[in-house]
Length: 298
Length: 260
Image (cartoon, rainbow over all chains, first blue to last red; front, side, top):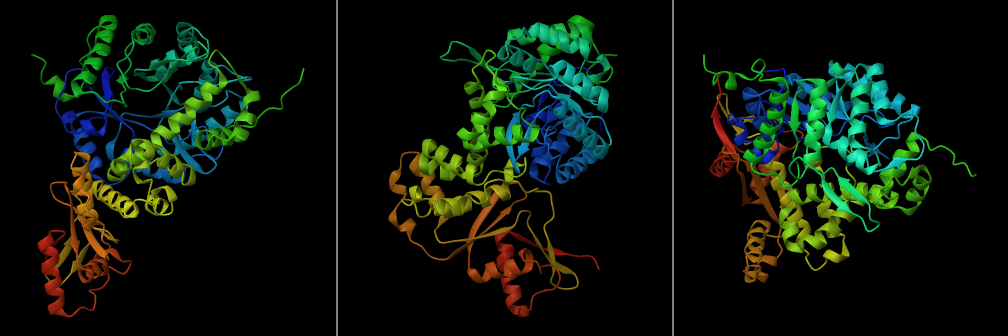
């Protein structure tokens, strides 16, 4: 059993890949799943247990709704804690967003206005989650489509304040940086630089890479959709290189949810991320799972 | 210059959620003064969230009731799913369990009146899906028969009562989808009280058999009622043995030797 997530590339594990993910795959050093799909004692959880015997696991939640004024569901936390106790994941994360309002859970990551009130709410919820889980939570920067007219902070300031208040870490989603910057009229490189400048380097515990879709609106504007349905774009790869140049080696995950490709396509994307890490920081053997150590001569 | 009173976070969340789910104009009107075009027009940005919510909910429901979707087609299914979502939004992020109210919703929907069996088919699809989620390595509830013998239920054991021959209708829908529309014969649309037992087999496959009402009642008494497991029901020994044999023959239940 392994706990620590290596500072190498991994991929998001989805149900159609449950079987093939048990085979050692070059480029895939760890796996990440959405815990909401494994909270029941189900056949899916059996598959996840088996995968966990081969590779370290990270849990990336989508349903804690950390920005909800209603707080975080105690039932969700208890079930997540039980899954964590069983799997001993290397990392646990969720999003800077809300999904629960009016008593309903809606499957979207709704944005928060970056106000003092929102900071109070998110900090209180993150504190509660970290206390209940007994560990640090990583918070992912969102993909933003809506721009509130008046905010007290920009995104880097808000995240930095949250880190300072709660001791949480940050999951830096590079695709989200690109999508948010483009949709809100910012320079993606400048937004990334601001995030890297404002966040403590040690707080960034994981990086996400994913594909997005470009929609051309009748009004002439470009709207980027963070749909995780294609290969990582060139512009996002360029930002990734900028980020790891500054951050050093960081566990990096390739996410793909829609139009899921064959496993080898995902692995190839992960290999590309590993190639960037190796080009900038040299090879890394320490921390890789035993399945890979055994292939190393000597 | 007109100043806009600040929107509380609670109101922001209530309005955004209501707009995404229901498309309510009032909710959008309350949000608009607090949003700016930058450079994506606000309306387009709001529409992204509404589309995302309904796309995810449609997809979750389509995975649970694939036969229903095959019957009505993707276009109508999308309308059905959106209507259902607005009336019965999920309460928790585990969407694999969302949609249990769909059979009754379909039965009450005038647009589905041409398919009186569709509610039963939705119930069958949902039952199959629930069993598909069962852990094939789990041990189901056990009922002691004698001091050293017990009946053990297969994982995911469930009963479904309905009026239509949903197993054969499902096969016919699959054939019709492949071009053999004659497979949906009038004979299949005859109604009668029916019971199905469903369970997860050791190879993780979902199994289903139509059974008699008397067998269903025994299964229910032994394994599926609140009082199950506490006492062996008062069924004459010979009759119980006969029923146990029938259950074991189905492989929905195993007869196991227990240690004293």
